[in-house]
Image (cartoon, rainbow, N blue to C red; front, side, top):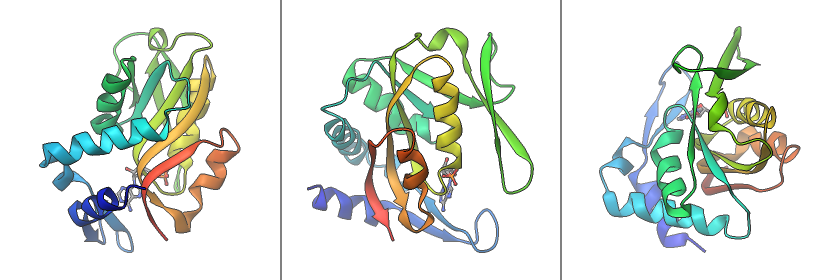
Length: 178
Ligand code: AMP
């Protein structure tokens, strides 16, 4: 459906081997940010993917989840919620901890950013193992509902979508690497 767009996105992404550590092929989306038309096309395509969903707010995961998350929220004319790493938000927050390869991490959101029982779309640039998005979903679910997950890129060989589908079946990405 988005084949022209898929090709444009894939051509724009820069593969950086062994970043941030050996064995990781990092998908660098910063070249996309240099193309204002492509940025807009990506946000439009994501809005189209969720046209059947009732979305009250978009929650973006720090930090690359903000890049398109804000654009998507603007197009939907709904609030944008910043999910941040612990210690960055100044007002009262709710928190969620999750396991990393080594140790744990905590994300948080301003308590007053989430309307109780509202329907929230979670967005990030890339889905890998799904651990970050599951933690984001658990955070949102402390007060509201998760109506779907949106990514620009999915690393399908890591099967992150399976984890997310236990929370909500509506898991969408624009391009997939298998
Ligand atoms: P995960 O929790 O494993 O799904 O990891 C997702 C988070 O890590 C997202 O916020 C991504 O931006 C980042 N990430 C993981 N793997 C990569 C990769 N190969 N290239 C770029 N970003 C990645």
